[in-house]
Amino acid sequence: MISEKMKVFVEGSSVIRAMFEEGKRMADIYGAENVYDFSLGNPNVPAPKEVNQAVIDVINEENSVHVHGYMSNSGYEDVRKAVADSLNRRFETNFNESNIVMTVGAAGGLNVILKSILNPADEVIAFAPYFGEYRSYVGNYDGNLVVVSADTKEFQLNLEELKEKITEKTKAVIVNNPNNPSGVVYSEETIKKLAEVLNQKQSELGTSIYLISDEPYRELVYDGVEVPYLTKYYNNTVVGYSYSKSLSLPGERIGYLVIPDEVTDSEQLKSAANVATRILGFVNAPSLMQRVVARCVDVEVDVEPYNKNRELLYTSLVEYGFECIKPQGAFYMFVKTPGDEKEFVAAAKKHNILIVPGSSFACPGYVRIAYCVSYDTIKNSLPGFKKLAKEFGLTE
Ligand code: PLP
Image (cartoon, rainbow, N blue to C red; front, side, top):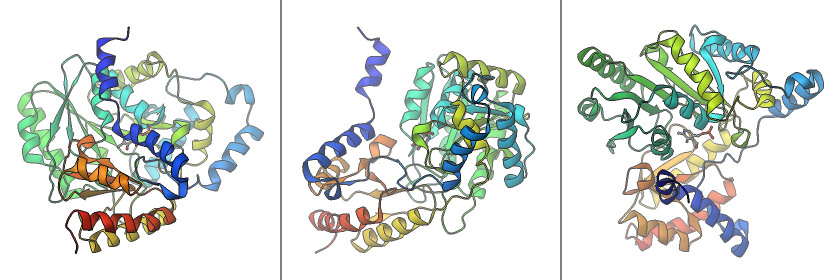
């Protein structure tokens, strides 16, 4: 018999994953080229050639006992140093290897930090629309996820509501920038205001509120948009990064946490993250991949394939009458549904278009389109979207 807690997780299990399975089933029936699967954020751009070369070089050049062995639970010291040095070069920060914990992707990093800080019934605040797994990650440690409703005008942060929702129980606030699912980048102005609210609340309540910056899409931005580095705006910030999206390595499970010296109880928190990595059963982030990313910390990411998709999809959908904010980052488009979102998702499926309802991100009335697919998939899906616009009364 499975646990009561697990029963709840299974029942609420991700719509996105279910859709991904459905996509595979439909591809068997209709042929992969006739199914437009926009359900999962699985990058379709191959990993940069530097990554493949690094894999070969690590195998050929490094001591194989070392490469495949255990190391400190936080990761290899030289790898953490390479990560810290790269961050310092790019963001004018001042980290060293002790501030970095190598993790099993962003998901692993978020679980490590939440396990490190949460007591049962502690609250973690997220802003809708948010990555649905946050609820499970917080639930893993018996915390409660508190949701600030979406700012559906600009998809920035609803800070007035944040002020109301912060209590003595608030242990952390999570932001995800660039955002999945909206594709929006929170501006420097928004981040400054967020820091102001958090500082004010910390002194008013006499508590410590960690800001967790979940940023697997940091490098995936368009039109030269800048993504502020949050440790520079709010001292109590922990950053969770992943190479899943930037280097197209989601199956390899590699990322890191940054725990700056300035955060509350920094030394204790670093030790807790080290132990959490071990006792969550990760033990350490994948060894080979640590050694590979250390050689790739400064690799430039080519966002042009995603940008091309973004332009075609956005211009076409707007032309058909859909309402949508133009994404500035990540590879998602969040489109307002004409009518009920569930009906819209079902109608789209009839045109072999798979998209995810906004309620999976606590923002009903929208759908998420993951455009990390081939250009042809976008192009060939357009007649279906056009028909949908007509069926839902957007065009004649
Ligand atoms: N956070 C956000 C916002 C995501 O979109 C994802 C994956 O899609 C993750 C975390 C998990 O990333 P990873 O595969 O690196 O664990």
